Length: 143
Picture 1 (cartoon, one colour):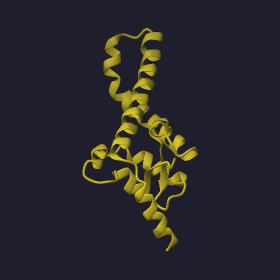
Picture 2: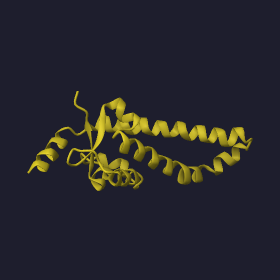
Picture 3: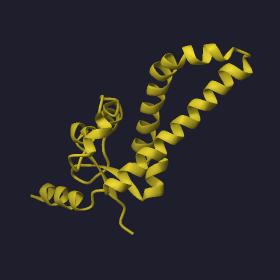
């Protein structure tokens, strides 16, 4: 009975779509800046040509950006329940019961972000696929 009450409380505190969108945009901006820094070091410091820069973009995204994003989300959300974007929007990740999610749930959540079209799953529902699959929620922090 108590877990049902906690789950109801979590649903009442769900972050707004606007907060979720701002979280997404800010986190993507951080990734873009990290990616630009990586490419700067690799191609400017090592004196490679611009052509190599363009040809290597797929490999950079697949083999560097995705693992870095998983580590980024998993580290922040496991240790403090929030990414830098969530600090700005005053939101945090919780389990469906309202407590701190396990590392396994956070890792699953982080990996599910790369399901094709996951970002659009918020358009027609309150929760995104990575929330539903990992049984986590993003909630507003009480002030």
